[in-house]
Length: 638
Image (tube, rainbow, N blue to C red; front, top):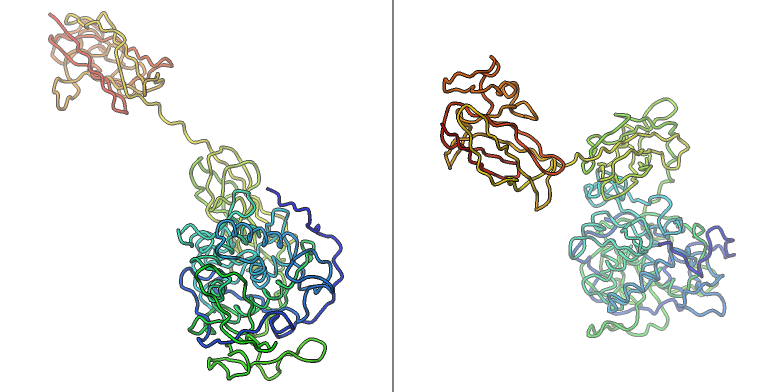
């Protein structure tokens, strides 16, 4: 379902003129009137909530803080979030992304009204995690134009999470990575949650749960934040929800500063024109999270707590003073620091015009980030392995698709994102029912696509490998799905078409032939193999008889009669020493067992049955692979 909105600014539209303001080191709670100051933080800092692994696995996040001035234009009203055309650039949110946040708020309000999820909280997290999907780089459906992934969660500075999605969501087949505009780790998206089916959601109604889609990701994040019966108007619940995303007090304070800023007003900007954050650092290692669950200074709260929670501000009026939510979590007001490692001293907003300057005596909270590496100089993708792949419908292709990225010197290039896409009409899919995946090349320059299932549709298609963002010819592998062999016809019942008794004299043939009809579940069974055998009269374990009646034309349609069947047509030939009157071939061993198939009408007429010199009652037993059994009596007289 295409996401279309009447009020949305179209991508590529002229950007609104905004004042370019430098980022301040203080949070929005320090701006005049931004949020009421909090006091009474006597219980220490918030604790990391128990439960699922944090959504982003402790990946780095954007540490940019909002500007001091309010995003509301002169004469405007705060908190409306309307399409104001003026204000700081930081207040602009890409149209599709903003719509996704608000739709997620509405959906959660219907399913969990007691949670009181504000869309500004989703916007704050989206800002910190991905810069609103890299400035709104999404298509009309809300899916990111390029995959947004965090660092490999290999335990080196981050959580240790081995691959859980075969690279379907994050393009990494060895470890998980936080992925998408809300930076879910694949295991949380598809395997977490209270019922083990994941926090993934379908926010745009297209029948898929894609963490790379802002509608899906925003709704999934909203439900995650509301877990455990939280009421986000209660400060402790709000703390736990945010810390569940990334267990860092610095992260908590950064998110809350953006919540306060966005509650003062926002405006839409065209998709792809959002202001991109600059500073990235911080991890959710939990090193700066101390015990306790009380509120920290300078954060905003929301009205109307869930009934029965007894929420209270828990402090006195500070006369308009605010405190800085330092990474260590200092005490509010003019009192002593909180006694926790890294605690800061309370400060007051500047009285003069212009933005506040950070305290030069304080060390930076995050190490400086390195500039992004230049794109690898890829000039070619080399196909590895078979040029053509073949599999049977319903099975998996035995060999994965592999390519090697090379530079102009023919040397392998590592770290290149390679997209494998299925081109053509096919039911084949990668793991997770994906028709395209992105995988990074390894140190050897090789990218290996995840397991490919053939699906149920026979035919041919192409697996196309392309280097994402590089002008390199694609590498194609042709794949063919063969139709699954038709199942063998089945029959669960056999019956004679005549009820006449079968009698013949020794040394002659039975005048009445034997014809049977095969059915399966009451319907005609065509092409069913039926084995006819002259057997002994042992009721427990009948075996092929070595005397008595035999088939005159054992070679016709016989699967087990072989050459002996063709020789078994001689008159009087047998094993009892009775002389026959036929040729030498007639004197060969008679055929007493053969396999034939029913016709299109389900009927089978056995070859002529002859007798040797033995007299008495003999048994003809007919069977099918599905267990149908029919026994026919043959009487031979002197």
